[in-house]
Amino acid sequence: MVKVKIANLLFLLCLLFITACADSNRNSIAFGLNTAPVTLDPRFSTDAVSYRITRLLYKSLIDFDEQFQVIPDLASWDQLALDHYRFTLGSVGREFHDGSKLTADDVKATYESVLEQENASPHRSSVLMIKQMNVIDEDTIDFILAHDDPLFPGRLVIGILSEKLILEKHNFNQKPVGSGTMQLIEWEDESRLKLLRRRDNQTIEFIALKDPTVRVLKLLRGEIDLVQGDLPPEIVKWLAERDSINVLRKQGSTFSYIGFNLEDSLTGNDLIRRAIAHAIDRDAIIKYVLADAARKAGAILPAKHWATNTELSGFDYDPEKAKSFLKQAGYDIETPLNLSYKTSNNPFRLRLATIIQDQLKTVGINIDIRSYDWGTFYGDIKSGRFQMYSLSWVGLKMPDIFRYVFHSNAIPPDGANRGRFKNDQVDSIIELAEVEPSLTKQAKYYRELQQVLFDASPIIPLWYEDNILASRKEIQGYTLSTDGNFDALEKTRRLH
Image (spheres, rainbow, N blue to C red):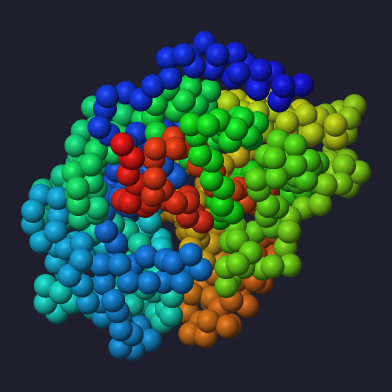
């Protein structure tokens, strides 16, 4: 019934506007977003939109291919010793947007600013092993580590900033200056961001439109050209039948989960977390709500990652087991447990939360859903103001995500351990894996770690969502990536 109502509403709205469907006179390529970026400073970006846009504005020393293997970007590298890496800058991507040249001094200044504790970069914990940086010449920099780390090159993903502007305390958040393929034109308000593609002066606009129906209508009218993700499946299906629209789909690595505040007296109880986990019918949600555009997850890293535990597929749907755990915690249908559940006010995310609310109610858990605009919601999550919430991780490539999310030293602002999870065994395995020179043994540690995390259940793995693109047919050249980045905008063009 909900699907029919949404589809009918969309159809009626489209009938109202379809006669006016026509491309605008603008020369830009417009990309519709569900939310605006939080920051354009790569030292502080953690949300999906900020991460994806900063990749366009800044170049990093390294990147990853579709198989999660580290590849050179700004620089290639040599391992001179187990704790000593030398990076040599190439010739591509070496000009900042202000015309100055990117050198090894800029690399050093960028990572020094990330490591400076007072700056409170959330990425600091991922590069804490850096003991010393020595600039050899303008093209060469050495990293001396506090301990052996065979995965170290893959940690250097932060976009490089200008040393001169760092020293001047430039506002990279609002006025980004990188050496990426695109540069800022204007960001007058948070809802509209304009970038210039440097190779051909093509304007790329990012327009934040929270309501998916509004995004779709603007797509049909030609007011925006592309929409990636955050569309209800029934709308995607409807769009695929439109002559003016192309729809693409690709399996993704975006990991959706439910998080908990482990310092809360209720959600800190593992019996309650397990009851919640077994009360969620993921199969039904994936089939009927996500239209099979997702795969069940048992751990953060996707199945094809070299360090994942492929034996984990998540918690089975078992209402009776959920009731048993809940009873052990002192609750049942007659004496229900009451919890608050925070989510964004994105209509589709709110819809998923409502379905989970209904499923939990059948075992004796009453959920009070509290939805907020993205900025308020995300701020609450980072500050620990929640009992439970749902979110997704994007762009996961390295197993250092485990330190960033689960180590007891990674509580914000020093990382993303938002649930305040503390477990000595988890900390120990993370630390052992980080110094293990054998990748085979490292993978074994990380598989063990994922089993320990599954048993401790600080989060509930839900699914990996597919990446879906809806674009106007005159827009060509945009391809989907596994992690959902926007890099293909470098090659996107409009047919006239």
